[in-house]
Length: 379
Image (cartoon, rainbow, N blue to C red; front, side, top):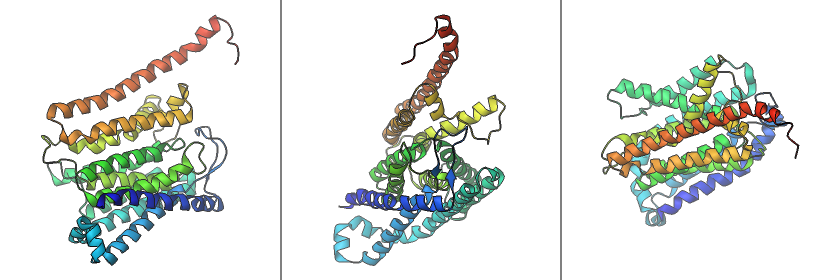
């Protein structure tokens, strides 16, 4: 019966999020936190932001209800009979509550930072943003939450801080097209749910279910054509939570021959990382400010190659899902199989870059070729 709790938690926050998003939309309009059309924006018309508030509220409300219910009924005979595994984990849960509180504190700092950024707009200093992000990541270290696979403690601390700040900004940058950042977050969360549930990491899987449901409820309102954007409020919360939950989960199992399964989060979240690194490289190559937004993201380049917005987003979903599925079996493969999975992931992105480069060159040569053969009739 305890397996049924996963879909229950997902559907609970899904329903709460579906219910709360319209209220977030009204609040954004009232506060004039809206996204206007701009030369670097691909959407048309005015869109309210602050969808992230609904994601956060749905997650926190559902989590509070479940924790309250657990401590209220944990000794009840029906609860012990129906959910014996959860009842047996009472001591572990009590000991884990301080760390959960630390995670939620950091997530709240990120949410507030994103809200301020949404309110102030382009005038908000990126230096202040980075300072607040590093503060939120540092909170985790104070709570004893960090990676453990590095050889020395200070390297674990360093990797943790840069992982959290990096993934947070990666999802912030990925939020450049309707349904993109939220959809990738849902897919990544579902992959992590499968992994943690199979490995009997019950509480990690349950928190991920709550998180995935909250984001999925928002995605319903955010998929093309979007009625609301998550804003930095949402992208900061989503990125921080995914980065943190990947740190608090484990991936190496007794059957694992090596520690390479520790790279699973890197594979599952490789798409946002790829988008971030590629757009930074393009801006650096073109001698443009790295922190100034543009329309050179992976999704924008797919649209430039002829895809529709919806098609580009679905293509990115498929890439994320494909890599995530192969990453999920990493702990159970022999060394040669693990190396093949890592090599396959690299080759997928190499093929994408080659195809996009060839297509871009073909598009650049198209006007010269068509002009030589006369005008092209319109459809």
